[in-house]
Length: 162
Image: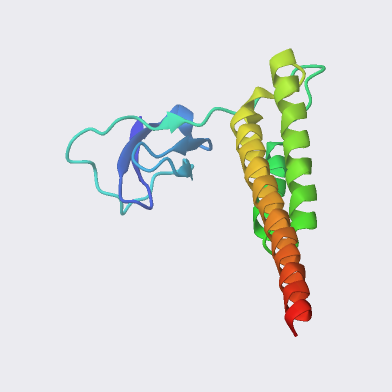
């Protein structure tokens, strides 16, 4: 027997008895829904048959010898390096270098098959943000040194004439 379930987005879907108690994804918005034990009485029958609910695949455990990725850490370090670069170029540079190192290690592990490949996009994003944070930090360092040098030259010129 099949019955109708309604998503929070308003999408009506038919669910078979073998889906009872399982989580399914809404075909419109991909929201995870648990199929109830008993269909609700107040739910109308769909005017036209809708697509059946799609099962959410369960996350498989990682194979032996494969460690979880640290892409989230790389992205966090990259974002922090960009944020801290204008405040303190040294902290921004250190965080940028850390983001680059963590992401490079994960990307090498993904290519070697020893790291979960699901983190490849996170590791790449973390590396890019780490590079951006490092470049901003170095640019601020160069500008600071340049401004101090120009200030010293101006003071020397003023002392010579004054």
